Length: 488
Image 1 (cartoon, rainbow, N blue to C red):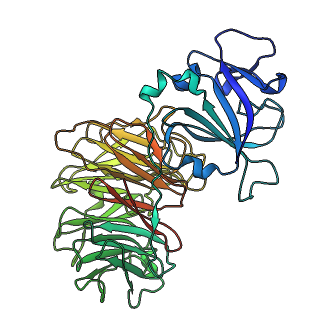
Image 2 (image 1 turned 90 degrees about the vertical axis):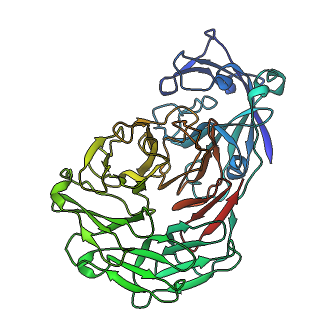
Image 3 (image 1 turned 180 degrees about the vertical axis):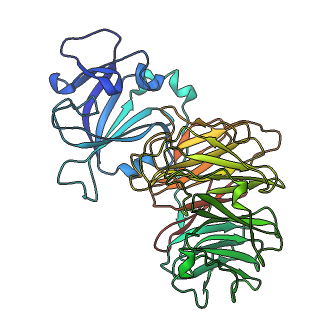
């Protein structure tokens, strides 16, 4: 249901009764001062808003369902959250009264209009299932030129699948269109061989209390799983199966105090690595050359020293990335700066790069990394304790193999949200763009960016990991047995 709220008109002239919203770089005359609910907006030259918002008038409506309005939309200004103090103005120009209310602000574009959408949750009502929202739609009469460039995408809801278990999943391995594996809590591993129509639910014997946050499947029969936990308690372990998960063999379980597995990855069926948190200030990485049957530790002295509080996050089995024959990268957090360590010789020598991500606490940093070739990579993260308002940037990229990193910013990027997983959309070999298509997911939902296009919100489900089957199907997993597929 929609209800008229106000009309907003951009202007370049100063008007009586303006209020300066310094953090938005905006002068505004509230619609509350107008008999007909007209809001005047004068943006400063360097205000970080798209031209459509800066130049084109809008009509605002109140709506009852914010989430449904986001699905399939092309985001222009991504959601940001601010808590305005009782002595300051709220972030939205349409409400210039004193208020302690938190605000979520975003803008998206449809075929005929650019929409600025804001959810305004009043004190005492923050847990309501439905909250009021304001949707600001640009007047169609002013969109003759803008509509030429505006694009609309149909809503593509995730298809949640019944997998027969309430285990929470963080491990996900997509072999092909038909075969998908996932792993998670309570020693649980699930597998489908028919594109999700039916699922086998397996529990690793003797490991019912373990959390298998990492999995790498090679086909419908062979897979390797990794459990996360303290090694001294027997919770850091690697198992293998060769019969589709009907039985599992324990292949590696170090007992070193401080070892805590974060991610497992393979170049091919034989060569792989498993990453642990640092021990005694030194990074810990094990490697295998026989498909996970045996593991040996790379000498810690080969790595740069770990910073105080530095480690990796076992959030989605993707804090480490392998590419080519010998390239390795892994990301860190929890310290004063998030870093990317890299090796071009399968771990024999290492270099480290600082990134623009500066974690303010132990729950912040980089969580996931992916490379589409030896040069172009993207890493994501944020603060998992504050997923809706993480310190920016939360998405960074490199085009020189990880030597330097830059923020993926701009009003259209979801740069203030926490993401736990990144996956590239496969592209043609001739496409060498530094920003190809990708998916990012986290507790706030999923966002897709096609090559050369803007970010599109694709759901608000709580997701831990994402992986692709080809370039038209995405799989995602999350808490409480959530497994879903989306095709576009």
